[in-house]
Image (cartoon, rainbow, N blue to C red; front, side, top):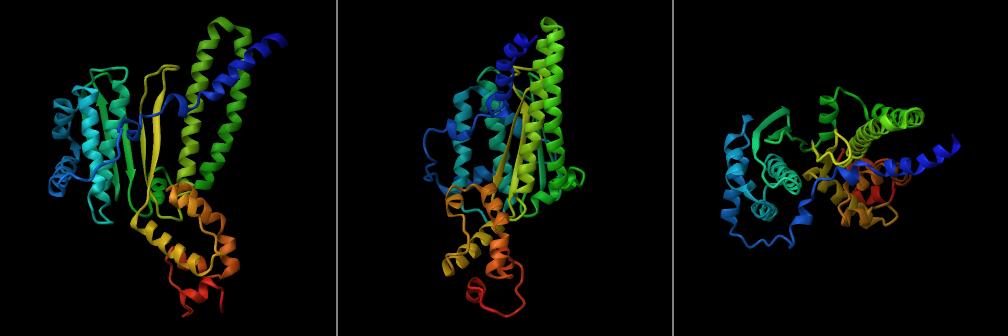
Amino acid sequence: MMKMIVLLAPLLVILAGCGSDEITEIVDKEDILEQDIACDDPEKRLESNVHNITGQFSEGEMNELKERLNGSVLHSQEALEQEMETLSAHACLNLPEDDYDTEAKMEMYLYMLEYYYTIMESDDDIKVDSLTFEELDYRVYQVASQLDNEKQLEITFFMAENARSRYIHLDGDESSEEMYENALSDNELMWGEIFDGILLVLADPITRVSSQISGYLTAESEREWKREIVQTTTNTRSMELQFAMIEGDGEALFYDDEKVRKIEIYPTSFTYDILDRWEEVHDINPDIPYPEEHIDSEDWLEIDDFYVRNLANFRDIDDELSNYISGRSIDDGRTVEEIANGVE
């Protein structure tokens, strides 16, 4: 018996390493595009292209955009790469800071292209059977796509400030604290399932091992996705960040329920306003904690987490410091310099 458990140990190590990052990753557009975006396309033509595509995001069936995809874009990986290069150039446009609508639609379209590219790596001939667009709530968009091979993709974009609150509202008003506790509980259940699986495999190794591997990978993928959602909804509350959640059917190389999943984080105009005030008080008083490295790398979740972890340090300098950085009103008539230096 002990010898069989020792032999199973490497299998458990392998399974533990088969997380969603290794087998469910969507090809990233940055890996596809070989060169940086060259902002040399005439701006009027670029703007026309952007608004032409975003204008095809209409409630219900998006037949015009589906025809664009099936008619030319999905003919080959080369054609798909060209579409991605063209669409990536929309970053060259100086769109209004609060034009979250256009930004969300363009990014959702790019995510669709990334997903199709991933699927085309193993299936050269794909076609979009259905493509729908829906506004689930104020500033919450969702795109759903189904291919002729029955693979499905769903993208939900929580736009602008208070994106986290919109997600929690749509998900049933579950707080981040409750989600975190549930994730911990799921982790404990996972280890119980592993040991239960060991007993089943030992009892009937020939017929049980395949189903146990599949069941474990499916459950672990769901837990990893929940943990990522918890991290996102926890670390987007202070910097007014917006985010998109992408879920699609994968290639099922290891188990039947394999998914491709990712969450993308975006700053808002409010995010940049907070960073400007934060940098301002840090320049006045260098003792004020400031995440310069995270800002340079645009690691938005780390920036938000850094802010929350340093709230006590802000209060040690001045009770009003965090209020000023976050944009809340200061009622005691003091200057920014006085607040930054803790002058009463």
